[in-house]
Image (cartoon, rainbow, N blue to C red; front, side, top):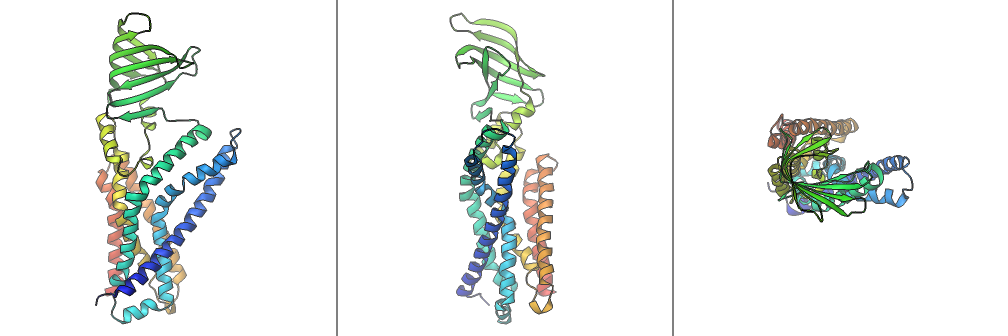
Length: 368
């Protein structure tokens, strides 16, 4: 039997509205917690207006929507299925020969369409606002603005000198960094004073990052008003470390789904690991399938008839199962980030596991 188009739209609409309701509730609760946390952090600072706190909280809303979408699908699907079961609408449909797979098909289609929209269209918008959030947060709360920029031509590092009376900052360019030997290739250092006035330029064939020192070799030193000077070695005091440089990279959440692949290529070309960014990109690709599998999990705990009782316990069990799956996903992602598990396997395993578990349990409940 083919599910009538009118019934398909009816089921799809119920799921869509229930998911939106669940998402609104989750985001509202998360925003309240976020505002309280921001106020707590702001109390340690001085002269941070409430408008900055509210702006920071508002900038995180799209990011929260992305992060909470899977939970909203789980809770919303359970709400929709429980309501349709309580009103006996699904009972009537099944008595007419409609299988569980047929009346879940519109819901899965809607959820996967939402996943595709969130990944391809909503994610670029959310990443821009989250990047703005990190800039403001770094300026007012953490005091750690980004000091690194990466492009197809290489890396640009900014080293601010707070302890020097004359030198204000160094702008360091390198074409490539080797993580194993801590070597920089084709290094250029621009030095400025406290008033942003240019002092000197250093061109080095290579440099090695040592504790508190950037050791440059094969150096050409250029000072305004003086001829270039050739130096065999030059020791530049620095507070940079490899972990500091890696921490300064833009987090993958602040980058658009469409911009991640070229950034990953630039990161790897510069000699850095892009495991975290690659894992995040594949997780975005897998998210529509994860959300589709979440509908199956919700159906397992929501199709019990009212006369059989214990619906509340089943709903609670479904929510607990969702949190367990989230915990499992975090473990797999941690293994993928550490390089223990291949990136594609780590990113796609949660979606595959949810789909298989949900399908297997529904087959057992439906066909015995």
